[in-house]
Length: 328
Ligand code: UT7
Image (cartoon, rainbow, N blue to C red):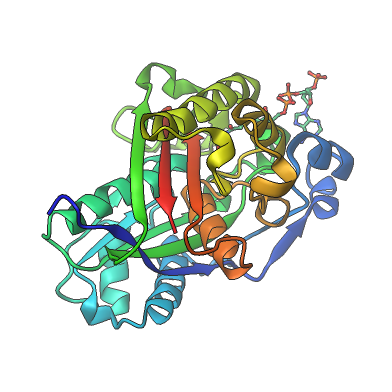
């Protein structure tokens, strides 16, 4: 059992058609295209339609991954959806996806790990495959961040986007997941949260008026931690295997801010032009979906070759973080 290799046999994505550019945001809040590009690297983001919920995007990404893996929904043994913007509190979005896909015999559950959700999902899914409990696990990271974005708050509304990525984790003959590191620091949860709507502060007229159902973020506090923690997480999965940052073929990070990612690359001693995968320019920060979509696109664009060492590295609300080292 120990030498069973677990990897990705199919990847998929779905991005809503509607593009919201920085120029359009200039008309909504007091901001400029120049500020957003310089401070974040974002040029535009996708926004889901009003009638498009997280599960709808998740299903589209899942179908794409199933097709790429040459599998049918009935082949799926477990569905995990990583999201902080579920269709509703309950039932789980994964159950809604199970029904829409017709993957009837698959158990299904959500995980709420914000931007690190795809990496936590990879860790969970790979254990189920490695143990032999399940053969094919469908992992989806899907977010409708626009549904929790305060369009009056310029410090956050310029950052977020909607989208979904999916992966099927199964036994592979070569390569696979080499190492996983996960972490959390609940003491700093208030740096990025949605204060109301849960059991602590249930929804009421007052909470709506106080705009407490929107994402609140202390960006610069997170910025400092993100750089340090993502660089350390990378070390945690490379050093025990005798590897250095420079041994990595491609780093595919959570796309929160281009400046954060360039600083992480610097700490890792890698050339960002060559070894850092970025698509933040097109999509902004899609929370859990960012890493999943980035991995899918890196493969589509041929940035990932057989035998390459790929590092997924993420950080976000919780605080939570994770790193996953993969041999492709
Ligand atoms: O997803 C994982 C978790 N999230 C992150 O890791 C995000 C980490 N943080 C960031 O990416 C950055 O902190 C931000 C992009 C959010 C902000 O960049 P910053 O360089 O840290 O800016 P700041 O918050 O220190 O604000 C600098 C100035 C402020 O003005 P004053 O006080 O210096 O006059 C802000 O009011 O920029 C102002 N500002 C804006 N100006 C134009 C904030 N947002 C905007 C905006 N347009 N959209």
